[in-house]
Structure formats: C-alpha cells, structure tokens
Image 1: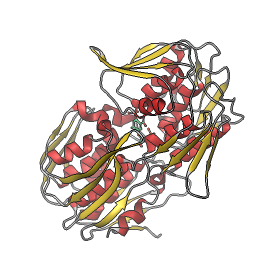
Image 2 (image 1 turned 135 degrees about the horizontal axis):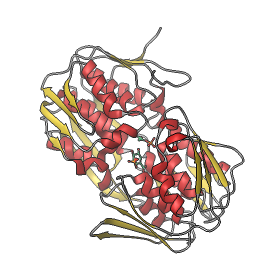
Image 3 (image 1 turned 30 degrees about the horizontal axis):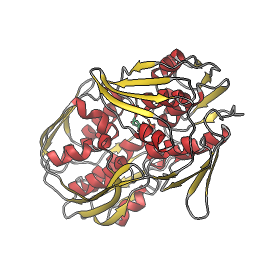
Image 4 (image 1 turned 135 degrees about the vertical axis):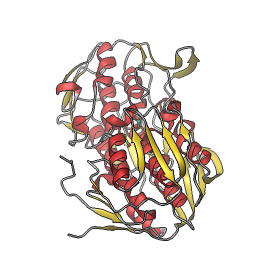
Length: 449
Ligand SMILES: O=C(O)C1=C[C@@H](OP(=O)(O)O)[C@@H](O)[C@H](O)C1
Ligand SMILES: C=C(OP(=O)(O)O)C(=O)O
C-alpha cells in the first residue's frame, strides 16, 4: 500500500518549452539542521541567514525548543538561536516529532545521548520505517541505551547517560548522519571521540563545529578519514550563512539539460567538494554546466551555475562517488533516461533505506514511463536511446520528496504528461519548487479531481 501525507496534493507536469531565467534555490538542508542544533545550544546569539524553511528543518527548530534552546525567525527574515552552552540541554517534556527527517532524527539522537535524560522520537510513516540501529549501536558503546520498535525503528527512546565514554568508531556504512550523530555525542563527552570513515562523506558537521569554536581534527589514515572531536569545549554563537542546496539545485539543473532551448543561471549554490558528485557526473555526460564566481562564504564553498540544454551521453558512475551525490541518484536516473547509451550507477545500496526505497521507486516509475532499464540489488542501469521517453504514467511517491520532484522534471520533457499522487512531501526540502520551476517556463500544475 502506498503512503501519503494527511493532505495529499496530486501534481502533473506536461511538455513545455525551454527554461529561462535566473533563480536561487532554498538553503541547504544539511547545513540548516546543523546550524539550528549548534545555535540553540551555544552561548550567545547565532544569526542564521538563508535557513531552509522546509518542514524537516522546522521540525528540528521545534525539537531544539523542546530541549531548552531558543530559535525564532525575526521580522527581518533572519533566524536567531541562543542556548545555555555545551552540556546545557534540558529534558524535553514531550515527544520530538521529526516528521519525515532522517537527518534531524539521527543527529539529535547523538546530541541528546550524553545527558542524564530520556528523549522520545517519532515521525511520519516514512521515518518510522527507517533503520536507526546504525546510530544506536555506536551511541550504546558511548553509554546510552535505547528502546525502539522492531529492527531499531522509531518511535524510540534514547535513555541518555550521565557518564558518557569517548569511542573510536569505524563506520560500517558511508553515512554523514551516523558520523555526525557520533561527533555530536562527542561534544558533551570528556576526551576525544573519533569517527573513521572508509569513504569520505559530507563534512558540514566538522566545519560548523569548528566555526562554533570546538576543536575538531581531521586527518587521512590508512583506514580512511578520521575526524576527532575534543569533548566539553564551549560553543560560542556566530553568524551562519546557509548556501543554496546543491541537492535542490539538481532538479532545475537536470530540467534545463533535458528541455531543448533552456538557458538558466542558478545563483549561490553550495559547492562543498563532498556534495558535487552529480555536477561532475553530468559534465562527464556532456552537460553544459559552468561554475561562475566560486567563493567561500562562512566556511562553505559557493558559486553560480550557468546551465544550458545539452545532448547527454551515458556513463558509468563508480560506487566511490555515491557519498558525494547520494540524494541525487533519482534525478540523475531521469537525466540518464534522456541520454544516448547506457548509464550504469553502482554502489546504490543506501538508496533502499531513504525516505522510500528510491532504487525500486525510480526503476518502477521510469519503466512505467517507457524507459528501458535493469535493476540490481545495489545498482541501476538506464538504457537511453537519446530520445525523450514516452512518459504518460501516474506515480505513487510514498512520502518521498526526491522521486516526486524527479518525476515532475521527467514530465516536463517527456512525450506525454507525468503525474504524481502527492506533491506535499516536496515541502520537506524544497518549498516553492513548483512556483520556481513554473517561473522559468515550467508546466507543473495541480491535478483537480
Ligand atoms: O548528513 C546529512 O545531512 C545527510 C546525509 C545523507 O544521509 P546518510 O548519512 O544516511 O547517507 C543524505 O542522504 C541526507 O539527505 C542528508
Ligand atoms: C535522505 C534525505 O533526507 P533525510 O535522511 O534527512 O530524511 C534526503 O533529503 O534526500
């Protein structure tokens, strides 16, 4: 049975002309969660410019308030946060409902673990099906204990510890969420907590902890990249500037590449080297994507992207690239459907445990749109013929924003319109998606009964 939100919003997209214009996408979701968590813990005021006001992030703001921090949006549009300093979280008087957000849940599980208090977590039907043992296993080694539903799924309770122990933990899966949960637990743990990752993942937590005044050392070791946090330092409020989310920019980028006549500029996109695997892959496929005015803002690399319609060729995307584009495979598989030749995407096991089974969802939905493909346990091969796919399918998105946006982008350039059963989940990461796409000439509309 498919899952949808309490107020489902069916949407459809039909073939339109090329996209034109200059746009900005909303703030980076990963950076926004972290800015609220650290800001609402730190001493003094943190100003957050460009916070993503998506549902996932607003849930983190509410959770931090329940844990004793302050987070509010000012009349000037700037978010301000203030806390009681490291070690200063208070027991939440209610369940933390993180909605659809795996990042919010897993990072907060780490943040609350080194406190002598119990914290309850729940979320929507998607979140309640996601594996959390990957986080509770290392946090148990640090002294916390857990009560969960079967297979470690939420609702769950974190029973924190008054005497946390630092650990050195080698990640069994390439996951920035697991790494971050351990580093955030290390924040209120005496001594040095170290995470070793065989494959480097996004480093927003390490960069931001440093920005707040915490000592974090990162070094390459024979076993992988080791990130070590010195616990119980003080966090000092600061100014955070959130870049545009490259995972959101991915949708207008691919839409412009597959729609003939498109020529767009996306300003102020985050270009952290651990997030740009999609851009590298699309350029290998022959995409015209030019980075302009690359600069560093508040510790993160950003730039403007000039994207023009391009003839794409199939490529092999190696498994090692997966951490740097993990959320971008749904939209890459759409680009691949318009390319000439086979695109092989390897190392996709983690896609099975996102907001939905994204590998299965993309394979089923693309096939329904007439795309020839092969699906393996952790790989997908899309066999493009250089022509636009038929489209004409109705897709159930199962509370998952990225397949939802991906299939709407496919419909913009397919032979026949594509519809999705529920566009509401898009608001978790990309509020204003439909208006932004239509403002450039896109043709996405509500399906009326
Ligand atoms: O740390 C983060 O902010 C994120 C890490 C990734 O998850 P995993 O760590 O589970 O790969 C990604 O899919 C998610 O959207 C955001
Ligand atoms: C996987 C994602 O998010 P999360 O894990 O935070 O739910 C995503 O945004 O694609």
